[in-house]
Amino acid sequence: MTKSVVVAAPRGYCAGVDRAVVTVEKALDLYGPPVYVRKQIVHNKHVVEDLEQRGAVFVEELAEVPEGATVVFSAHGVSPAVHAEAASRHLKTIDATCPLVTKVHHEAKRFASQGQQILLIGHAGHEEVEGTMGEAPEQTILVEHPDDVAGVEVEDPSRVAWLSQTTLSVDETWETVSKLREKFPLLIDPPSDDICYATQNRQSAVKQIASNADLVIVVGSKNSSNSVRLVEVALESGAKAAHRVDNAGEIDPAWLEGVERVGVTSGASVPDALVQGVLDHLQTHGFPAAVEERLTEENLTFALPPELRKDLKQRTGR
Ligand code: 10G
Ligand code: SF4
Image 1 (cartoon, rainbow, N blue to C red):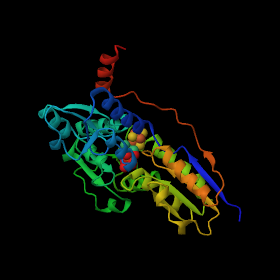
Image 2: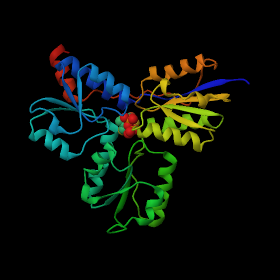
Image 3: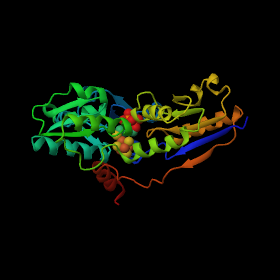
Image 4: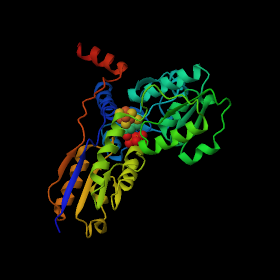
C-alpha cells in the first residue's frame, strides 16, 4: 500500500479573517484588556480561546458590555440596529466586518432603496445573515435551500433581486439561483459575486484533491459555515470519506484504517498551525510528509478598520 497525503492550497485564513484577528490583537495592545468582542470574532474555537487568554471578552449581546467600553464587531457583520444600540449606550466601536460582507450590505441597501424585494440565499440564524437581513428586514426573504424555492412568494415578480451569504456552497447556490430564475424570470443579479474569492478558492482546491482521496480531513470549527461546506464539497467531489476536526486530537484512529490517500484542508477561520498539527499526526501514524497541491495564489489584504488606524496613528505619531 503506497500512502500519500495531499494538502490543499489555498486553505486557512482569508484576508477578512486575518484583518479581524489582527484588529482584536492591536486593540488589546492599544487600549489594554478587557476589549469586548460582540460574538466570536471568527468562528474558530482556538482563535477565540487564544484571544480570551490575552484579555478579549466575548459577549453575545451589547447589553453585556459596560457603558462607555470598547467593543469590536465580528468579521461576519452586524445590522444597523446593532450600530444604533452601541451608539445609544455610548460604546466605542471598532467594526471588524469583512469589507466583502460590507459590500453585500451595500447591495442590500441599494436594492431596497430601488423598491426591489431581496431573496437572500443563506442559513437562518447565521450572524452574517442576521446582519445582512437587518439592512432591509421588511424587504428581505431568506431562501435556505434549492428546495425552498417552490414555497417563495413575492409581492411583485418584476421587482426581485437575489443576494447571498459569502460562505455558501458555490454549486448549491447556483442551483438555488437557477430555480429562482425559472420562477421569477426578471430576477436581478448582484453586481458581482457575493460568495467571496476565499470561499470559492477553498472549494475549488478541495475538489481537486478530493476526487482521488480515500479520506479528506477538514480543519475547522463546527459553527464555521465555510469549513462545514468544505466537507460537503469533498464528499460531492468523490472523496470516499470526509470529516471535520477542530484539531489533530479529534482524528478518530478508525478513520485511518485501510486508508491510502489522505487529503487535508482547512476553513477560512483556521490558523495554519492546526493544519500542521494534523499533518504531524498523520506522519506519526505511518503516513509520509504531505505534498501541497496549489490551485491559485491569493494576495488580497485589507487595511485595518479606520477607527483603529486613527488611534494607532495617534499613539505612534505615524
Ligand atoms: O464560515 P463562517 O461564515 O461561519 O465564518 P468563519 O468565521 O468560520 O470564517 C470566516 C468567514 C467569515 C468571517 C464570514 S464572511
Ligand atoms: Fe471576507 Fe470571504 Fe473571509 Fe468572509 S470568508 S471574512 S467574506 S474574505
